[in-house]
Amino acid sequence: MIEAICIGAVRGGTSIVFASLGETVTERSGVVNLGMEGSMLAGALAAYAVGIETGSVWLGAAAGMAAGLALSLVHAFLVLVRGANQIATGLAVTFLGLGITALYGQSYVSQGVNAFEVVPVPILSDIPFVGAVIFNHDPLTYLSFVAVPLLWWFLFHTSTGLRLRASGEGPGVLSAMGISPSASRWLAISAGGALAGLGGAQLATAFARTWSEDMVAGRGFIAVALVIFAGWNPLLTIVGAYLFSGAVAFQLELQANGTGISIFLLDAIPYVVVIVVLAALSRRRRHAAPAALDDVFQVDATLV
Image (cartoon, rainbow, N blue to C red):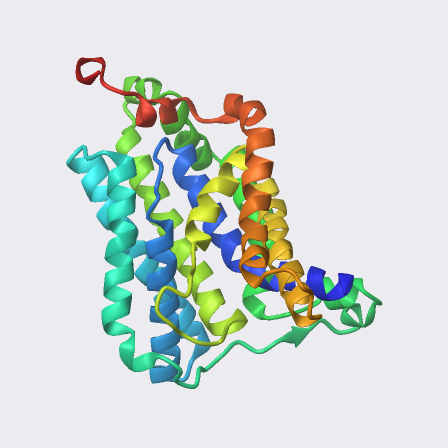
């Protein structure tokens, strides 16, 4: 049972890893994007549909990234150009994604998918327990293993990553140096949307291997919450994603074993875990938040 839960944590958590990485990049630039849910939905449908129409799972994954990016650009335009409220805009983008995918995804419901196959790593996949948990997955899951340290290196060891973080910590300093914080934020929001789209693509074409309306089921919002859990550190996002997905796998195992607990209570377990963890860590993580995020939640005193 433990092995099955761990395998489910990794396979089911990959989509959330990508979305969490995307939101980490976005928030590091000083912008909150609650539209991650919509970008994941758009990515899931685009990857599923393009994979079926072209016969290529990789073209489907690329289409998923493009769809997630396109939806994030709506958020970027409204926030960075029009000065719209980030929270309201993110929610609007999520509902936009939900509506678009519900409309155009009807003809793809329950169609056979051109899916990513599991590719065992030679020799390593034969290692007891560890081989099944780590080295027996689809290519996008392996990609997530690389993406986490790669994004950490980009943020903390490259000049572009430094400018991106500076746009979230001290945009005034960047402006004084003649560098546009807005340009860094456009880049961050775009990259974040593309990563969320890739997460949706993995969910539809590698994990669930199906398309259904609103199949993301809140994973985009969980990804946003896990950024706080991780303290805006890409290396810790994978821990939060696997913790949530492990809780999902645990409650599914309980259902499969015929426990007498109500299925509605079991379904709530993963979300309760996230709430408890956030409640325990949020105060400690507050100091790690990019300074520009404070402006997102400030209330205009004239309205009070």
